[in-house]
Image 1 (cartoon, rainbow, N blue to C red):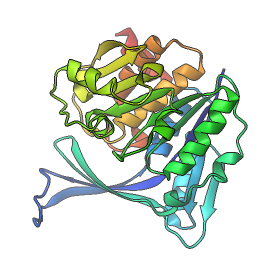
Image 2: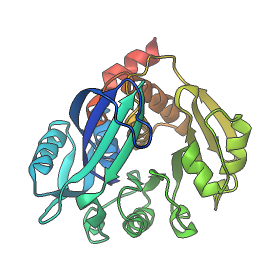
Image 3: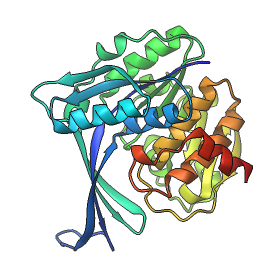
Image 4: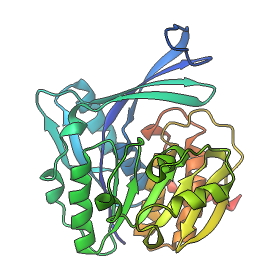
Length: 304
């Protein structure tokens, strides 16, 4: 079995719930405040670990109380933290999240995540069959260095280009599997997309990306499911009808589950179906990393 290596962010999510999101300049009364482990890198590593894949996280924490709490939580989830550094004189990454009617708004303050460097990703020894995962909450030059090492070792690279930030062809050329939503796809393809658009629009936009024909491109569409383009052929995997409570971390759950299944040697089609089911469980719970499902839970959903 291959291993999953995630180079990415580790945050404490400060979550406020309310009946609705405030308008600009407006104050609304909230219902509750929660502190949840999060960060896209941590979320994806936890998802992979809880689904049975050996999962190593590469990143940085601040030398503060949030950092200590996150280290304890991630260790308890089975994530290997040997390559996570404590960094003095900088705070742990923090996300301030508002949730209303299951939709969220997020402000991320990178903190220690902004210091994850090429030196940090030079330590792990990757091999053929391993899966290298990253996202855009750490510096892009670090991701380029990580994916170059992964490619040289014969590992599969998965990029989740979120939050939506422009990137150059050098990085996209190193990606085997691209997992993104309609906003991120629209930015990279330089076109405006909406989640209600016909799937053909997403296919058209995806095929405009550099070296698109060499990649597997997965466009996550929330409750509509996921559109996968494999060797230029699109397939729509329908979403599952569930009552969403908190969509924070759903995309990360999908990425982590996909990586875990590919590390097990599953086909891309089976891995996508599995990841879609895993994400449908995640959205029914509060929090990001704590909402990631177990393999037993996903098996139950797939058998129903």
